[in-house]
Length: 133
Image (cartoon, one colour):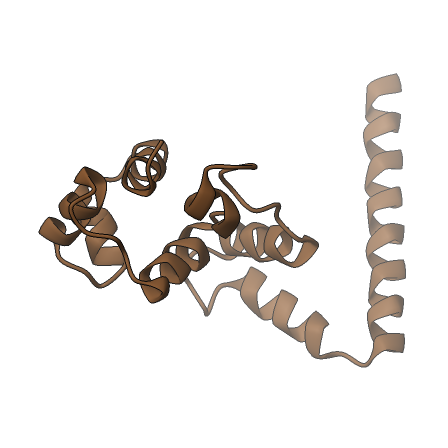
């Protein structure tokens, strides 16, 4: 499979049109088309942009060997989860809570975790009591 075919495979896997892929990479749609047809080879910069933007394994993109996507780090997974939780509203209550927790000194974060665990334990006990009644 050629580099162009792998770019097309990424695009199809992500359910993007050539235009959408081009917009995310700040390219033109016909540039993506010429990559996919093998008429033009993307620059190292474009390859790097594809890998960074979509989490693609650069070795796979260049050679076809290995996995299509780079393994996600704990930081990647945390960022994705935070993004889903917080949505696009920087003024949401969840955003304020998380930012406040992050900015606490370490010992205060540990205290906050202990408080949250105590609250969870109390709520669990209440649910168990309701189930027995």
